[in-house]
Image 1 (cartoon, rainbow, N blue to C red):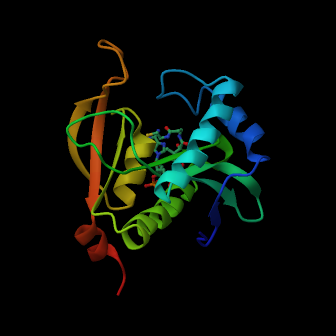
Image 2 (image 1 turned 135 degrees about the vertical axis):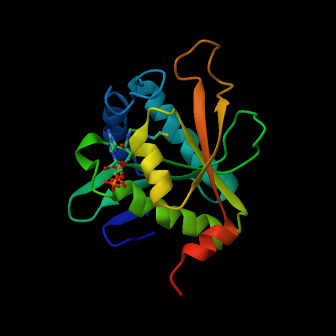
Image 3 (image 1 turned 120 degrees about the vertical axis):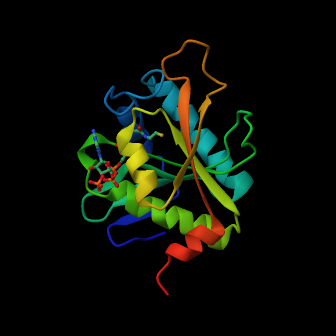
Length: 181
Ligand SMILES: CC(C)(COP(=O)(O)OP(=O)(O)OC[C@H]1O[C@@H](n2cnc3c(N)ncnc32)[C@H](O)[C@@H]1OP(=O)(O)O)[C@@H](O)C(=O)NCCC(=O)NCCS
């Protein structure tokens, strides 16, 4: 997929090094349990590719035109945990620090929402993060998502400071209403 400044594409072997470097950066992983060792990043790319094969959508590798072949990922995925709002499709994003605060996540996420609603016929897309992740929450709001609820992430142990999450959502009629005629 192409937006004015980005290309959202399938993963290439050459992305793995930059992906591992991004996931090893504590600033990027501040709201996750830990940074990822290279081996986990390699495994994650494998899981992302399998997800595309299974569902026809996934976390696309993001290229910034004329700037970098790999800035991170933006896309759609099916969470593997159980909660009152699952099964569902989640929209998510992770970019390397040099590409923050330039509107890239919002721009790519809008293309991902369009793909989910028009190509995959999804009825609703959710997103979630920890309450303190204001940049991510801001992206959710900028693309038209609405705060729904708080929930405790079942994959994190009781007492973990990251357990509490905020849930956002957008449904097809609301997304349709935001599109220019
Ligand atoms: C979340 C993330 C993808 C956002 O990417 P991005 O390209 O910078 O996002 P955008 O530029 O589209 O929008 C970011 C918004 O957050 C705002 N923002 C960023 N940091 C902020 C802060 N500390 N306080 C308040 N607002 C903040 C920006 O000003 C911008 O809003 P604006 O356009 O209204 O000014 C990026 O910060 C990232 O990769 N973080 C680490 C990984 C992560 O946490 N992913 C999400 C997990 S749920």
